[in-house]
Structures are given as structure tokens and as C-alpha cells.
Length: 277
Image (cartoon, rainbow, N blue to C red):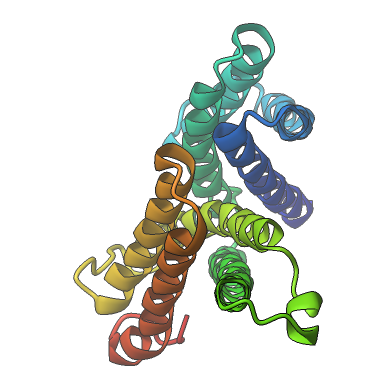
């Protein structure tokens, strides 16, 4: 029973991560479709959280806020509730996005904290291992999005040079138009950035649960945050500054080179990451 509840908690965290991704898209583009989908997904998360909360009240015979772990869960429930209210009544979308970043972090801490469901040491170790797997999976997915974005930027530069030199031919016809290549590159980065952010948050949580610390000076740790900053800077230049064309494509390619340095060079030098991610 406890492990089944834990699986539902893990599903809630995954759904919450998708919700944060949708709110990030709305945060950048005021996309009402993404906002609506995120709202209803968050509402479903809230229903699951409320069901868990009611179950604990019935199980313990009291309101479950007397321990740190119980308090964290109630805090996460409050944040989700406030997000729904703000989204539906006040329409302050920036507040909703950042509130859900905090809510996701708190929910993840509650879900993967050792012995928080009263299970055995083996079950606690399994939860921590699953947290690590989710962290690695999300990192790989974000790297995949960045890689495809890099490909689109390279195709953009090829198309740009062909048009500039007026080299008409089959290659030019087989490539997409510049605006579509630029847009696809941007969309993939919009997907990759929040995914990498959530992956890093889960990685920090795993480190503090497993070894009680995180060596911030480790080159791989620093490199991962450098990758996040590089792609965040790309989105800033694209959305806020309005950088277009060849310049933004080159910036995206430069960000991908930082990713490669982090993946291969920093991964081999790291004493903390025993896997190369």
C-alpha cells in the first residue's frame, strides 16, 4: 500500500514537471492554450494532493503538519492551491510560474525524502535511486532538445549562406525556410531550459539526501549550471532583446559548444559525477 502511494506521489511530481514546462511556455509568449493546459493539469495535481492529504488525516486521526515532512507536503498543497486561485482570478502569470517552481521543489523534497512514508530502509534507498534516475532522464531529454536545436541552427546558417551567395539548387529547396528553422530551434530551447532546470533541482536534492552535501566547486556541477545560464541567456536575447537571424543562431551554437565541453571534458574531470551526464 505504501509503495503504491509512493508511485502515485512520483506520478504527481512528473505531472507537476510537465505543468511547470507549460507555464514556462506561457511565461515567455502569453500562450493561452499552454496556460489552459497547465491550469487543468495543475488542477489534477491538486486533486491528487488533496486525496493524499485526506488519506493522511484519516490514517493519523489528526491534521498532518506536526513533522517537517508533513509540513512540507501541506506547504506544497498550499502553493498549488494559491497558484490555481491566482491563475483563475488574478491572471498574474509570472507569479504563477515562479510559485510553481517553488512548489515543484517542495513536492520533490517531500516525495523522495528518506523514510517519509514510514517505509523500510530498502524502500527509502529505492526512492533515492529513483530520484537519481528521474534527474538523469530529464537531463538527457534536455540535452536531446538542445542537440536538435543546434542542428536547426546549423541548417539555418547553411540556408542563410546559400541565399546570401545566391546559390540556387536542390540543397536550397530541400532545406526549410529561415523563419521556420529559427522558430524550431527556439521552441526546442524553450522545452530544454525548464527541463534542465528541474533536472538540476532534483540533482541537488539527490545529493543532499544521499551524501548530505553538494560539492558546488566540482567542475561538472559548475558546468551544468553554466549550460543552464548559457541557454537562459539565449532565451533572454531572443525574447527580451529581440535578437534575430544569424546572430541568434551563432549564440545557440555557442551554447551547444558549452554543453559539449560540460558533457565530455568536465564529465571526465569530475570527482563527484561518476556517470558522464
